[in-house]
Length: 460
Ligand code: FRU
Picture (cartoon, rainbow, N blue to C red):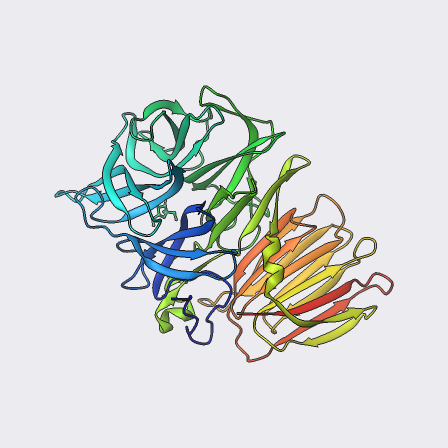
C-alpha cells in the first residue's frame, strides 16, 4: 500500500508518516537487496507515547514509500512494554534487526533487553530474543542499539545509557557473529555531568574524520544553543579499533537549529553515502498534546532523507539528490526584486535562494506564519513561529561561520526544513498557520544584494 496521505488539513505528502497514531524515532535504516527500508517507532493505537512497535516502509528511490506490515510487535516477555529503537544490518543475505525490549516488571520497575530479530525477505521477522542483558554500573535506561561492521569484519554496537550516578553515557560492545557480544566499556571517556541520559548513539566514519552522534537529555540552554527540550548533535574525532572514540577538542554541536529535530539515525547505502533521517519531533508533553493533527488521529513525521558529509571540521547535511525528482513543472524564478509576494500553488514546495555574492539583510515570511530573518552585520539567521499551545511567538537562531550565500527550503503544509549555506546549518520545524494563505513574502533591505529565487511545486 502506498503511503496514505489523507490526514486532514495538515497532512504531509513526501515526508514519511505513520498511517495513524504516533510516530517517533527512525529505526533500522538500511538498503537491503537494493531496497531502502525505514522502520520507525510507532504507537498504532493513539497519539501518546504508550506501547511502541516498529512500523515499516520501503522504497526503491528514497522518495516513494510503501507501507509494509508492522515488523515488530511487543508480544514477548522480553519486549512486552515496547519494541524500542534500534538498527539494522545485513549479514549472509539476511536482515538483522537489533532493538531494545522495554519491560515493566511486577513491581513496575524498568527492565531493558537488547534483542535480535532476523528476516530473509526483509518483511517478516523472527524474534531471537535478548542478546545483551543489564550491565553493572548502569541503570535500566540502556537502549537504542546501533550496529555496524568494520573492514576487518568485526561487529560493533553502541548503546545509549545512564550510569548509576544518573548521568548519560554510551556503552560499546564487540562481536564476531552478531550473537555473542562483549562489553568494552564506555565509548568515550568524559565527565559530562550535565545530562542524565544519552539516547540514540550512532557513529559515522568519513575518510578524514569520524563523528559520534547522540541525543543527550538534560543539557542546559546556553545562548542560541540547547533551547529545545532535548538535543541531538555530535562530536568529531577518531574511532579506535579498541572500541574507544577519541573526541577532538571541539564542543558538542547541534545537528539542527530548529525546534524539534531529535533521535537521528544514519546508514550507508550501496553507494557508500551516509544518509540521515531524524524525527520531527521531540516536544514538551503539553505542546505535543496540543499539536493540531491529534484531532486527525496522527502525530509527527520523519525528516526528509539528508546526505551527511564532513567538511572543514563539521558535519554537513544536504537533501538527497533524489528529491529533485519531486519537482514538477516549471519553477517560478525571481531575480532582482527588493520586495515580492510569491503566490504558491501547492502546499509542497522547494524554494532556493542563491546570492551572487553574500546576502544583505532580509526577512521572508512563509504563509503569514514562519518568519526567517537574516542580519548581515551579525551573520545571524533567525527563525520565528507561533507556538500552537501558548500562541506566543518563539525563535531559534544561529550565527553563521561565513556570510550567507545559499538557502534551500523544503515546505509542506505544516513542516519546514531550511538548509543554510549548503547544509552547514539546518532548521527543522513544524508550524500550523492560522490563516489559509499560501504566500511567501520577501523583503530585502539592500538593492544589488537580492538573490535569485527559484520556487518549485513538489509532487506528493
Ligand atoms: C528517543 C527514544 C529512545 C527510545 C524510543 C522509545 O526518542 O526515547 O531512546 O528507544 O524513543 O520510543
